Amino acid sequence: MKMLKKLTEYAQRKSPWILHYDCSSCNGCDIEILACLTPIYDVERFGAVNVGNPLHADVLLVTGSVNLRNAAVLKELYRQMPEPKAVLAVGACALSGGVFRDAYNVLGGVDKVIPVDVYVPGCPAKPESVLDGVILALEKFRRDADHGDKS
Image 1 (cartoon, one colour):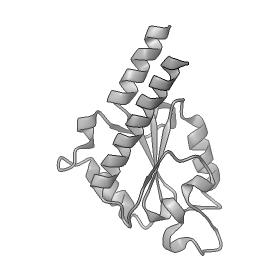
Image 2 (spheres, one colour):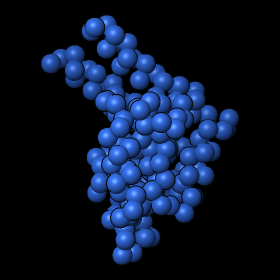
Image 3 (cartoon, helix red, strand yellow):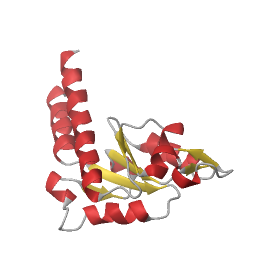
Image 4 (tube, helix red, strand yellow):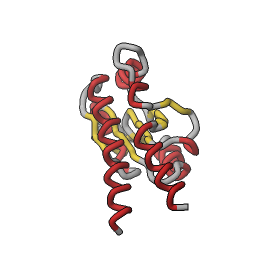
């Protein structure tokens, strides 16, 4: 059983499955995230796969500010993801609410609803920054696995 756990941890570090959720952004960050999938930036060289099911995802990539309507959906997506998992907040809106932070229905950034592991700033965030964020999420998996071995 321990060998299976080690194999699973290794696979997560080498081939993270990413679920992208747009809370309510202007789509600027979403376009930059889609650019990461093109051959120019090629996030797949890190083994990353874009999936549409939270039950299969290792990394939750969130864009846009959290509002009253999508907070419950975001919590449910996070709850459905298996452990270990990492959350990336991408763009100014996901970090703090961005230009929409003073709107009556905006709760703020993603960290107001679920824990965030990596913050990727920018308006919109550049594809290079998103790739750096994914790499930092993979480092989190490595640290967690190393910490688990010592305990």
